[in-house]
Each structure stands twice: as structure tokens, then as C-alpha cells.
Length: 141
Image (cartoon, rainbow, N blue to C red; front, side, top):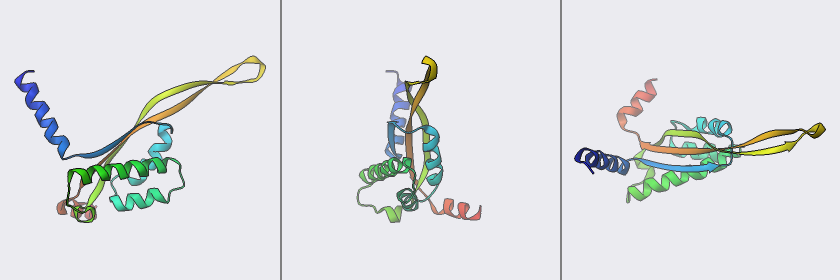
């Protein structure tokens, strides 16, 4: 491996130590339904987001709640001895991408058939801790 490639790999490794995320692949919910739930928690405080997901009637919120708890557990593993309340965690990004599609056939009248696409998605939740400057900026907007 060349020196430049090695240096960039080391920088990526260092950056991953300070990012806290969780990823869910091939979730059997359509991306459109999951994006509605993701919009509810994006940019919000972690405790508030957990409360919203816990009381949401949508089925996608159950999986998102579990994923957010996993991201918090990843944060706790990298920051031993710190409390979540003191660190001021918030949901920095929620990415919902389309996953694989299962193609099925539904019988239709007169010997025809309709195609059904059973969609799935990939969800990534990224957490970060707010500084005092960011809080003041968010309150002014």
C-alpha cells in the first residue's frame, strides 16, 4: 500500500473513533414509510427522539427505536464513564436508502398476473454531541 493511501486510511480510522452510528440493513419496510419516521427525529435531542418513537403509532417507529438505542449503546462503548445527559447527544443524520426489492406475482382476472414489489430499506443513524455554540445558534433560528 502506498504512503498516501496509508495516510488516508489512518485518517478515516481516526474519524470513525469519534463518530457514533448504527446501521440497519434490509429492513422489510418501504423506504417511503421509514422516511416519514426518520423526519420526526432528525436533528432532535436523543431523549426526545426516543420518547417520540416510543409513542408513535407507525410500525416503522419500532425498528427505528431499536436502531437509535443501538446507536446510543455504541456511543456508550466508545465513551466509558460519561453520562448521556451530560454529553448533550442529538441525532445528527438519519439516512434511509432503498434496499433490495422482492418481486412477487399477484393473480389477476382472466388469467393475467400483476407484479408486486416488496420493498426494503437500509437505515443509518448518526449521533453527535452538541456544543454550547451550536445550541445558541439553534435557539436563535
